[in-house]
Image (cartoon, rainbow, N blue to C red; front, side, top):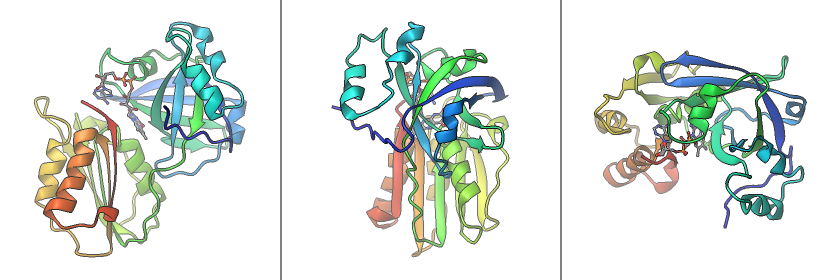
Length: 259
Ligand SMILES: Cc1cc2nc3c(=O)[nH]c(=O)nc-3n(C[C@H](O)[C@H](O)[C@H](O)COP(=O)(O)OP(=O)(O)OC[C@H]3O[C@@H](n4cnc5c(N)ncnc54)[C@H](O)[C@@H]3O)c2cc1C
């Protein structure tokens, strides 16, 4: 079974690496280009993609079908692991249509996994394929917003801050492993953006959850968005719904990875 959303709106986008730069201790920014990006439907906010990366076999990307349907996707996934591409989820950090360049910020989390290590070793000309998945953020009609993320959710929260109407008020709590991972933020004046540093011995989510527990929160006209390590996302929701009496519909949350 797959829960993948197969959108034919722009189809699979075949892209090439232009550059890969370590922008901070735990963030590797890979810039992609390619003629297929003319078909990108840029939505902003936390727009994300399924990113297909080559396995040991460089030809594995050729198995991403040009016309992706549920059937052709399942067929590709049924290939032996070394022949099919690996698939991971990533947020589109920024888009410069004038030069047709797209940035993705990869958290560098050591030697394990596929996408993190791939980003560090990516060289100009390396290939990947993207499948647009739209946005998780659905523009709730609320005047006060709480945004909570760890470093994997940082691109999503920074994108939302960049694209929100300038009249919205609220708080963004962003947890990073190192203060040097904090990025410049373009945000509505009425949203206070606060960076919290996670100690090496602390599990992800602990600093933001501790901070959230101390906050006064508005009684109405509010919405929360929490993304990052699974315990962070579910912890924020549990705290708001169980301890603060928020409605379930007042919280959008998504576990981006599992510790
Ligand atoms: C909608 C969505 C958007 C996302 N956007 C981004 C994004 O913009 N940038 C980003 O970096 N991530 C993002 N993620 C999270 C990313 O998909 C996961 O971190 C993914 O597991 C990374 O793949 P990998 O191949 O490096 O590691 P995997 O092969 O998936 O995992 C290997 C091991 O590494 C651990 N691991 C995975 N990620 C981390 C991490 N960040 N820190 C510590 N340990 C980890 C796993 O628990 C596992 O033990 C997003 C996820 C979703 C669902």
